[in-house]
Length: 140
Image (cartoon, rainbow, N blue to C red):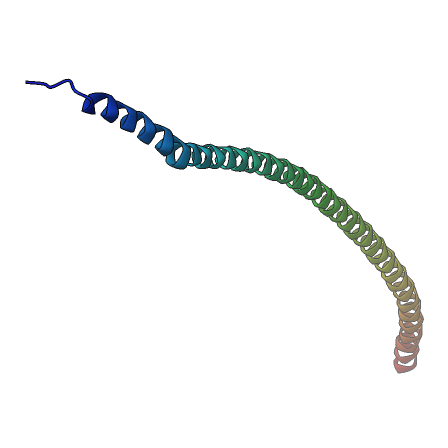
């Protein structure tokens, strides 16, 4: 069935020679390309991780700066509102004081006018009384 003659060792030598040639021509360069690609992918992943870490660090810095600036502008707004409230209160108090002073001045003027009007009326009453008395006496 199976013949063992000189062709079997020759086939074995050809097979081994083919393996050596294929290994030198195909498998070693192919393995080198695969290893280089694996190294490149690994380096790219490492670079991407480092870049992502840098981006995260920068993002955190910007978020902190944003929080700080929000605090600052809220503080500035609160101060401005307090100043505006204080100024408004001062102006209201000044206006009220001015109104009270004007009312008091008007009250005094009215009182003075009342006194002078009463004095004038008393003079007129006296003179009218005198005239009435004179007319009554002359007419009797």
